[in-house]
Figure 1 (cartoon, rainbow, N blue to C red):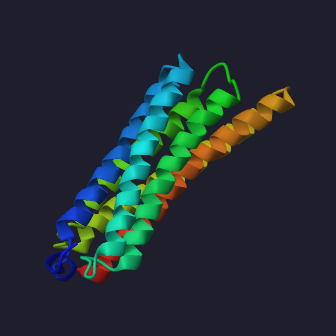
Figure 2: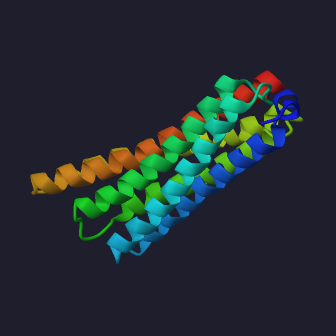
Length: 209
């Protein structure tokens, strides 16, 4: 990297990478919805999800590499690191829960998994919009609206999880209870991670508006 690159903020590159990562997270959520609604050929579907997750890891690695090489950043280095980690965490939970369904060898998904997957997808769409808005923050209110909606969706996921756990504990098989409980909780955790990303985005919007 030359002197010019060290002195001039790498605004465009950072924001391009963040938008690419947010889009990849949303793609994973879309694939999750497809999987729970079309629960077949699960091994191959998990392989496709892993490819999406690998792509996310590559983008996240590129963000950290650029951060280590850039003298002046468009937002605080800590904010860049926190946002990259938060987005990567969403992706990890989506991928991890998908693999869990396969390794646990569950025969079918259910209404709770479908509902949670849709809430994850809605949340990632809001995250994607908010990430795009930090490129040029004209008003923090627009980003804050997205963050409030993500919080609302996370609260809905909490409610779905509660109902799912109520039902699953009525099952006779202890093994099924453990399997389904883990999957429900990890799907809900993905919405928690969306909320974590929203909190980072809200902090960025307030600090830089």
